[in-house]
Image (cartoon, rainbow, N blue to C red):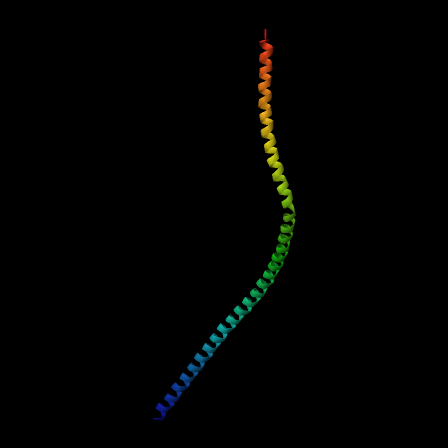
Length: 123
């Protein structure tokens, strides 16, 4: 019986050693997984800081563009009166061209009458 008891103790020792190895391996694996997740989180934090820095620069650019657009708007407002004057001049030029065209037709008609008179003088 002592041999059986000794065998049971030996089996229990092997089982305890195997369980201890299993728990150590699982612990090491979990620790490695947690370290990997921690490294990934640190990388994400660094990337977020870099992106935040870039977006801050974009915000500054956008703010500068907004000021530039406001300046352009104020300058374009002062051009409105000139644009209206140009439109008025354009209308007057169109009317003037129409008058010139009529005068040209009238002069052509007079010229043809004068030529007709010179070719067939009245008797």
